[in-house]
Length: 115
Length: 115
Image 1 (tube, helix red, strand yellow):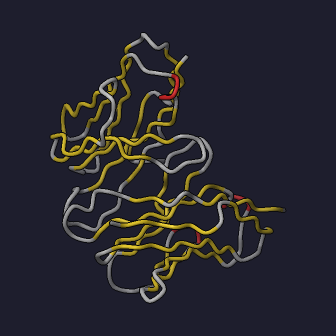
Image 2 (spheres, chains in turn purple, green):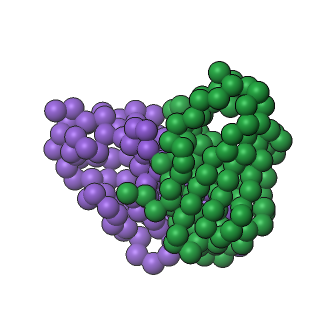
């Protein structure tokens, strides 16, 4: 079984400040990990993914995440927030190999960016 | 722009109506998915098609009937829906549902309101 915990349902930052969105996972097998962003009235857009290899993953829009197996974490960061980053962010896990169709989502973190 | 196209964007229907949601992708993906998303919640998986065959039904009520006419198209037929079925319905696709590390790509969804 696999699960995802996103710490903080709502994170508020000032424009230009560091963005840190937390995600912890549990998985009985090596996981595939994803961050998706959802802007109002839109679908989910893939920000970045970790499957194998380098543990620091760079994504779109200046976001990156680091896979830390020892901490079972995959936190999302961005050095400087922009107003356009305001959105809902979902961390998701699927299992590697086998039937990896099932994405298990966290409950989401709403990011607001203050001017 | 998303590579998964969903129509219509909005749909209002009465509980006795029959309507269909449509999804199209031209990425050559062989797995396609239907999700239901309620406000401020993560998406919930409903159905998975793999190579145009229904592989997964997550115990969805029979008033929802999926169809995959070909590898690029996915439909969701709706009949006798209930007010609690009002939600955002998301379509997604991926290269395969088994044994690969490619992510799911989402459409912008159809916002469905049941009167």
